Length: 249
Image 1 (cartoon, rainbow, N blue to C red):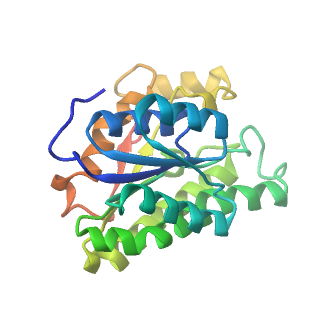
Image 2: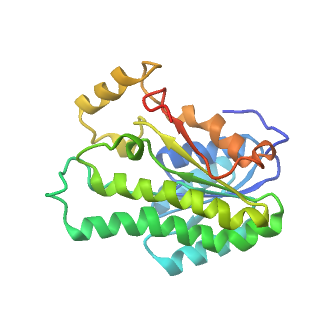
Image 3: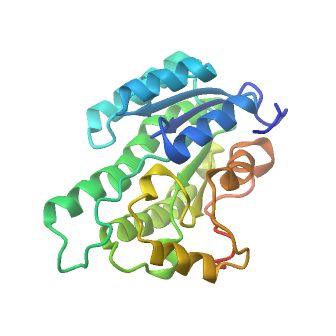
């Protein structure tokens, strides 16, 4: 993990979906970099354990619940004394391995509610706090699946394509408030949420990467810290694929 850096020391950051996987990696990295961190999730026991272990604030937050999102962002801002950064990390897959014909409406709606509507609502709730900070940053987690059109994953891929589009629109709307909005697009990363992915898909990614090794959660840390820090203030509306060169955007 990184050593404390002047770029993030004292920054107040909320991470959604922070109790496991990439979210947990982000929480740990931000705390190590000197940020003050709150994170939301629905995995209450894991969230409370992580918060106690690293010195962060855990907040129960269901990204499918609009009122819960508003309450969670408000609680994070209260705990931290404001917000300088928001990492919209929380997402669900749910459609993996099924063709578009096999998807059902309930699954589609659930994925869109969490992955798309949740990003919008969390950003909307955080907006006044980020504006007040004078150095607001939003980092949305997209996916390189939306850049190459991964099959048998349509609800998730579509949701991440929407996140990319929202990132650009948000950047234009929030720029006058000094808020930079960007997206990270990871490749297939070895975390709990991707344990269901067939070995053939892992091989397809590894064979197609310029850097031919598995992608690990730590591979995203440097990009995340940069996008949340002082040096990224004039970078906005961009999508940064961090995927070992599988997609070159």
